[in-house]
Length: 276
View 1 (cartoon, rainbow, N blue to C red):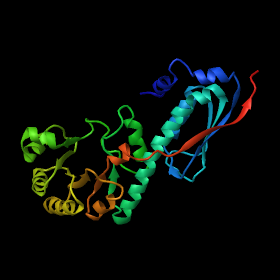
View 2: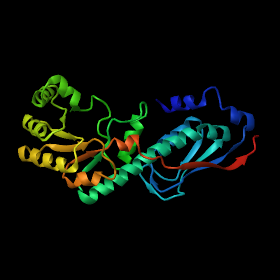
View 3: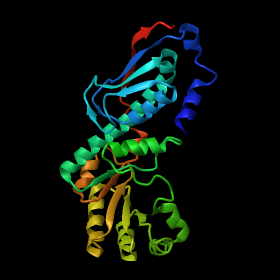
View 4: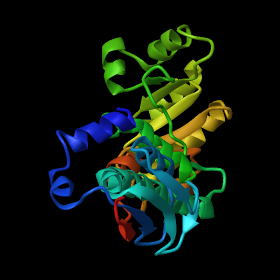
C-alpha cells in the first residue's frame, strides 16, 4: 500500500473528532522518542505529513541511535492535518524502530562471538507491510534476505517432498538460472552433505540445535568451503549467539519481524495560531 492508501484507510469519511472540536488553526507539533532506540520509519513519517501539505523539519535520520526523549521531527501547518497524520506516522516509527532496534541488538550480540556472522530476516512479515519491515531490518544492520519469491531459489521441505531427493532438487534448480544462487533447506547431517556434494550455494539448517548446526557446518565445509551455511527455525535473540559460536555464516530470525516490540513515540502540539 502507498502512503496515500494508508492515510485513506485511517481517515475513512473524515476525522469526526477533529471536525467537531477544531477549526482552521495552524500550529507546530513535535515527535519524540519515549525510549532509546535505533530510528527507523522517519522517512515514512515525513512523507505522511508532507502528503497532507505540512512542513516538516527532521531532527535525526533513519539509522541513528537515539537516547530517550530525542526529538526526531517538527511539523508545522494546519492542526487538523497534523492530527490526521499523527497515528499513521507514529505507527511507522514505532513498528519500524522496534524492528531496527531489535535487529541491532541481536547483531551486536552475535558479532561479539563471531564478527563475520550475519543476522537476517525471513519472509514472516505482515502482508502489505513487508517492504517497511525489511527496510527496518537493514537500518538495524541486518540482512533483509528475500523480499519476494523471485529474489532467490530456496528449496524447502515441501519442495523436497514433491521432488523426492535433495540432489535432484539442487540439480534442477541450478538449471533454472545462471544469476540466482541456489539455497536448500535441510533437516539432517546426511542431507546437508548431499546438498553440498550436489553444488548448493547456500545450505539452510532448519530447526537444529547449535551442536547439530556445528556438526553440519563442519561437514559442509569439509566438502566445499565456499558454501554458505545458514540457520533458521525458532531462533531467538537469546539463542542467536550460540549459533554464532557454532560457526555459521547467517542466522535468520523470523522473530525480528513478527515478534519484536514496538518502540514508544509521541506527538505533542507545541503551539496554536488562531485562524485568519
